[in-house]
Image (cartoon, rainbow, N blue to C red):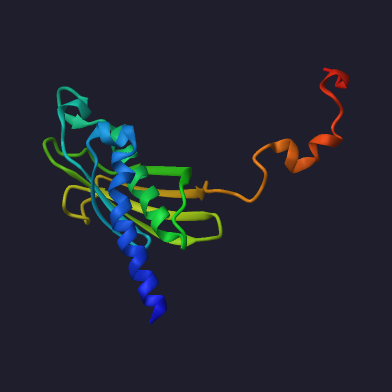
Length: 174
């Protein structure tokens, strides 16, 4: 029973923090990304169509980089929600498969699922679509690394050798 209560509290905390994942990221906010939903290891974001996001003026199709940013942001949020403790993450690897051009004037939805978590790495798959997940615009495969606080000293010299044992800078030859 206690475990379920802790799980519920974490989910409530995710719902409180997830919108800040967009609002606190200037690039995501500039692009107009919107938070839709969060669950353990899952996240959904949307990106309403906007003229500033057009990649081809003649066809009015969204720029591919916009889709990449949306998939990366949704995948990162899914990764954050998959770890036992909520910690910041950084994208290690991101592969995008573009399947077709996004239709002009349509909102793009990105649904991400973290399918595997190790101690410090999360593996995520995501799909971008316009409302029909079976007709994707793009899909992605990504891995994320936690970047939270560490018990290791921040100074790399302290990790390798005690600073007091190092020779003075004047004695070090260039």
